[in-house]
Image (cartoon, rainbow, N blue to C red; front, side, top):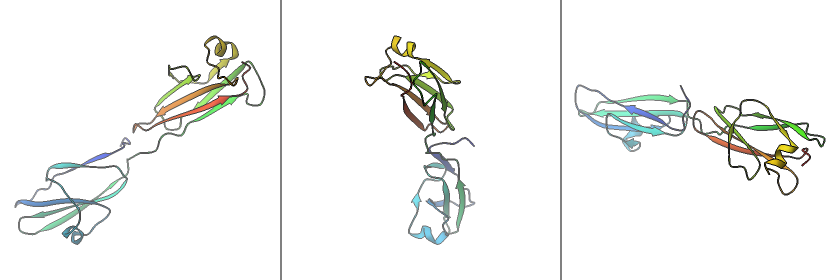
Length: 171
């Protein structure tokens, strides 16, 4: 199933008598736990969780019969994608560099060049950047470098922005 930042769990308890109590709790719990603990919810409702793990649902009918059901949630993703920018060459001053960006598990991949540039572009493959382009578009930093920014978002909506200064471009 697709990763999410929270998951809704629909609880619908049926019984041949009236359902009196419905509760849930994180972890694997015994019926006795719910005598004094657990979070009460309406029958035929949804509760939301933001952590992976086991959740126990408890129900009690009008004559005192009880039942529990445990479900394991494994598709919550709260981790932002790991993004790595590499510049080549990285060991000598030059007028042209190639920029490669590894976006990890990002499904949306964007980049921008320069601190003053406000336009994000879609990243599809390596970027070639020249000194002339940086000068013409005024993307250079005051310290004689230029900064590349990479922004990635995964399927759960987690976003990461990283920046890398290019020190080898002659501007």
